[in-house]
Image (cartoon, rainbow, N blue to C red; front, side, top):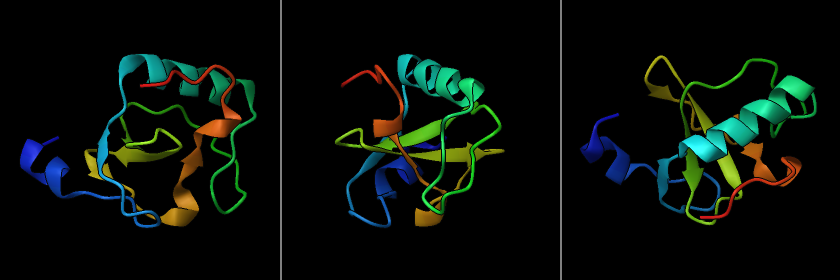
Length: 89
């Protein structure tokens, strides 16, 4: 993802800056998705693993990136509190 674009992106709910989710966080999240226990903000299940994602500064919310396009919709957000052992910054 382009660094200039990333510097402009913020969480639509909290207005916190977003950054790329590191590999440890992505691995933990995808493990929880594979186990079938992850739901999005609208209550629907997140069934597909993520290749890339953005995370808020406080690491409480994740937004997926589909084909290089960030999906910054509050109803599509994933709360990291659902992921046991989600790594802190």
